[in-house]
Each structure stands twice: as C-alpha cells, then as structure tokens.
Image (cartoon, rainbow, N blue to C red; front, side, top):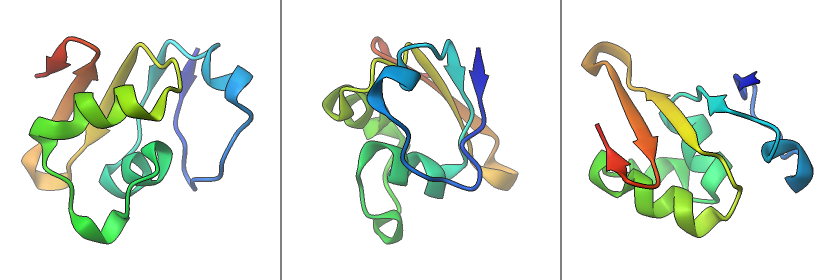
Length: 78
C-alpha cells in the first residue's frame, strides 16, 4: 500500500504497519516523525528520524520540491 499523508493527520499505529511506501513532502515527513517542521530537518538525518519514530514504515520517499526527493529506509538515505 502507498500512503500520501497529505494533508497530514496522525493515524493509528497499526495502519502505518500496513504501508509499503509513504510519500510525504518535507513538512509532512517532519510531522510524521514528530519533529518540528520549522526546524528544516537535514536529509542526512531522515533515516535516524524515521527509526526513532517507530512507525514500522519500511520505505519513505520524501519529496523536496525543486531539489528532488530522498528515499529513506532503515539502511539510510539515497
């Protein structure tokens, strides 16, 4: 299942475990992992942020506007 969390709203944790791929933008990603969207998180930290959130999402593609996108997995960021 693919999840586009726009507009963002918290979902029950068991629903995130059904998702194969989430595709949030940068602000939605920050909200998803419980970070402050105004902090402008560093993409190099996305994998760590995703792991700490404990949502069980295996893969997330964070869209970054004109910069492109970042594939985030437990193994890192591409």
